[in-house]
Length: 347
Image (cartoon, rainbow, N blue to C red; front, side, top):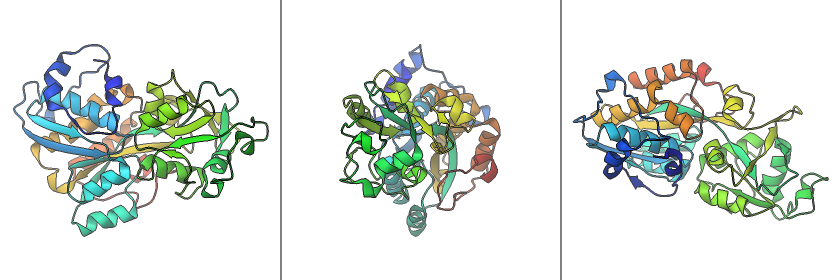
C-alpha cells in the first residue's frame, strides 16, 4: 500500500471498513500501527461500533491514515472520514452530527458559542504540527523567497482589482499576471494564513478558491505565474509539480518549509498545530475511545510523518494523552488563534 497517495483524496467522505482486510495485507510504504495495551485493541478485536469524523482537509490525511490502520486491527468498527473544511466541520460537530472533527486552527469564539447553545462539550487534542506552505509553479524562477509583508500586499482585501501583476509586489519581479489560488473561507488554513500575514482574517475576493487542496495544486501547477498555499503534506505529495517559496518573517532570513524548520520553531509565522476535537458525550464509547487512544498514541505517530506532517514533541504528546484520559473539556486557546503560542506552555 502506498499510503500517502491514498490520503489526499480530498472532498468526499470515505467508508473505510470494507477495505480493511486488503489494507492489512498490503506492504510497502505503510507503517503498521501497534496499539497501546490499554486500548484493548489487538488483531481480531471484537470491538464494534461507529466513529464519525469530519472537518479540515489539512487534518484529513492524518485522520484517514489512522482510520485505516485502526480498522485493520478492528474490522468491527466503521470509521468514516469526511471533509467539510474546518469551519464546515465545526458546524456539523456543534450540531451533534459527528463524533470527532479535525481542525487546522483552534475553535473560534463563534464556534464555542454555537456548541454551547447546542449543549455540545468537547475535548481539544493537538495531534501534529504543520508548516503552511506557499507554492508557485516550477516555471517561476524569481519568487524564491517572499516576505510576510509581500504576502500581505498580494492577499489583503485592498489588493482586490489593484494588485494584478508580480511587479506590483516587488519592483524587480516581472510584469506578469499574478494568479492566486487558495482555500475557501470555511477553511482553517485560510483563517490561519490571513491572520499570520496580518490580514486580520480577511482577504481579497478575486482569487480562485477551493476547499479541495488538490484543486489548488492543479491550479498553481498549471499556471506559470500562479501562487497558492496549503498544508505541508500537500506540497510533500506534489513536489514534482510545485516549488515551495521560502518565507522571510521580517528579520531578513529566508526559511524554507520542512519538517525540520517546523519542529525547531524557525519556520515562522506559518508553522501551526493541527487538532481533533472529540465530543465529550461520546468520549467513553468503547469504539470512539479506542480510536482516539490509537490516534494520539506515540506508537502510531509515525503515520503523522508518513503523510508529510510533524510529530508533536514527546512532552507535548504526553500532555495530550493526559488531556484525553482526564476528559478535559474546553479549549486552551479561549476562542483565539494559535499564532505564536507554544503548546507546551498552554496545555
